[in-house]
Image 1 (cartoon, protein in one colour):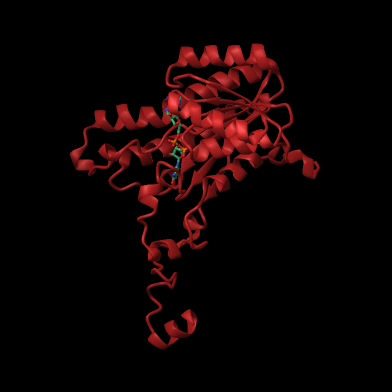
Image 2: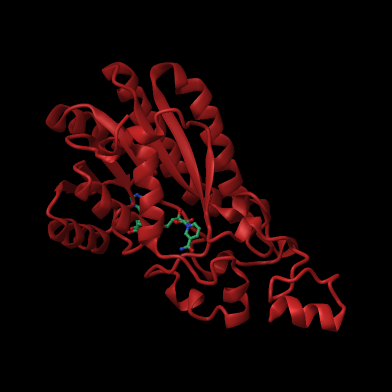
Amino acid sequence: MSPDSIRLDGRVILVAGAGGQGIGTAAAVLLAQAGATVVAIDRSEEGRATAEAALAASGGDYRVVDCNLEDCDAVRALIDDTTRELGAIRGVLNVVGGIQGGDNFARLLDLSAGEIFDRVMNANLKATFNCSTEAARAMTAQGLGGSIVQIASLTGLVSMPFGAGYGAAKAALINLTRTMAVEWGSAGIRVNALAVGLIRTARSRAVVDDVDDAARQALPLGRVGMPEEIAGAVLFLLSDLASYVTGAVLNVDGGAMARAPYNDASNLPVFVNDSVLRARLLA
Ligand SMILES: NC(=O)c1ccc[n+]([C@@H]2O[C@H](COP(=O)([O-])OP(=O)(O)OC[C@H]3O[C@@H](n4cnc5c(N)ncnc54)[C@H](O)[C@@H]3O)[C@@H](O)[C@H]2O)c1
């Protein structure tokens, strides 16, 4: 192991959902800068144009590919083409997911099972399942092992009131990550998830900018995160520095999960109610 073990020189890494100007785009750029040959996948034309522009500016090696990752046959063809043209696939970052619009915020009692499972669960799990399993099949045949990173969310660890499908899907993704790590460990394939906190991306900007100052300050690091800060954790997990890390869920959340729910907005436990003591602690 050396500090250079963070490098991904010449390794073919798929970034599934690379063109949202958020976590996927930032990670694709950092991976290319770390020497990887990045295969940036996006089903939208706009997303492919975004990935193309960002990767061209990175100075790294890349190709941008059109594929609907919910279509298993299309994913299999993509993996075959990539292997034939670029060589062994050594890593995958699965980004596709999210709450997918305001329609998916609803009270549990107002939802039908069909609405939760067919729409949000599919959007969050299908592409990731396809990409992980087809890549792992290729990695196993190639015999070099590999690393797969799933973009999960804090909501998969706690709860997601009024967004039940999203929370349930991310919890399922965390469970899938562990099962994949165990089933594929003997093939040298590592699988890890990031439990991502509040990140300011092109898509989330409008919401995140509305988070009031008290809520922001209550995060232990006192601010919302940036996509590049998720990319850093992705690079670590894809690199040989993480060679003994598998089945792990790494919180990248500014400390949100470390904070007790009984803390008030100043991070003082609500049961510290002596005003003199409060004033001293907050001074
Ligand atoms: N922003 C946050 O605060 C936050 C917090 C926790 C987790 N996350 C997670 O981060 C991920 C979103 O990352 P982002 O900022 O890069 O996202 P994004 O949603 O902006 O971009 C994702 C890209 O994937 C593409 N895509 C979607 N479905 C696809 C499919 N089936 N096939 C191919 N391409 C497809 C889209 O066209 C888009 O360009 C989600 O998994 C989300 O749950 C975000």
